[in-house]
Image (cartoon, rainbow, N blue to C red):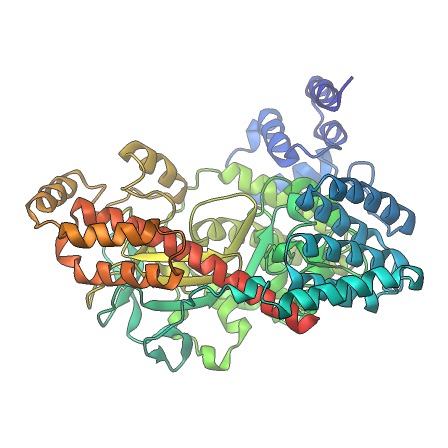
Length: 586
């Protein structure tokens, strides 16, 4: 009987026994367990619908699902297991399945028992071989350095030293991918003295219908980078645990280092490892597999509980102080632009997050959110550190309610298209409202975000981005369906029927873009040998010069191309940044 059939039979048996705890045992293989747990819970406990989250917790503690050692056991580091997994990676390497091989080598690195384990050094060395074959010579050198640092065996050293020499030679002869410079999307406008990563002349305002909004107080040109923000929190889906950093969410070309204590977590750098141990992972190390079991298939549902522990750390583990602040400050609204980021205090930023006003009290998935909070509560309370800090009933109830509250608000604050694998929280960019015809691009590369003007923005104009749907790509019905999860009906000029008709009519009356300029731009874009910077500059000039033809068809088509080129350029810029970090590591 195959694994899928076994799961199906076990799930059917759990349904017949009407026991969520049996269902937990049925889901030892990862098939988005939380979705099945939730479906089963809602079937078995309809009487709890709209009950207080405490009632959900009490039900889960009594009836399950019980996420215990039989369902998701802790994994203990093992050199034997590290060697076995590495052999699987070798088979992928020989077949030139490089990404599969990297993932297996990363898993092997996590299994290696201690920093002096020979298996740890060999894992890094094997990764360096893949990077060499892929032409990522900086990454190859960085992993060779890691192998040397972690007890790589002397008997194999000649091969490693040869690869090191060859990598340096390749870089010296111009074969480095860093030699293929991409244009930098640097901020060239005046920055705000208290927000050096943001343009001056931008404020938060309360606008009718929209609520909190980001508004320009001065004009900006197409191509202006008006914000470069780093996420204050990120999360990855458990499927990516051997591919992405658990702290900042970046893939980092799969070049990661392991948690020294568990098998389930990796990081892109020592800095991310130290920060995650400080803010989150100290509450999770030892129960990570249980958290992964219930978080499988989604990075968002873990972010609510993780935000609570991040806040608790900022309150110096003083739960009573955190409770006093949170209970005295409801979600009445907050402005992150009031913070002095030149003298950054993460606690003050967290307090802003706690006070952000919810746009609605009617949530699509409220029953599910309460169930999630209850299940996460049951798992986190297995951790000794959590039990030592969360002791009294009021403290336990506060943690539970915080899980629920933060899960709700995070759903509204996440920037860009909803996706399951990685998600990040940006304090300032989250103020931006949606438009299906945005004037600004939110370019996101894991924990890094840039807001870039797609077309000229006038003073007093709202700065708007797309949460996913675009009028130029999606039908009215597709856009409406996508935006239901954000609990609002879009009122942009493309979605309001009357405004859309006027906009279309206006576009037809506008003078066309001169044909010779369109042909010159298209010729440059289609030239595979043309410099990326030249393409970007010409698109930027087009967006500024021919704004008077907006919303004409030619202009809209070129702005869509400009949006795509900017997004690709930002990704390349961030990848080069990671390669430069690899150079320093080597």
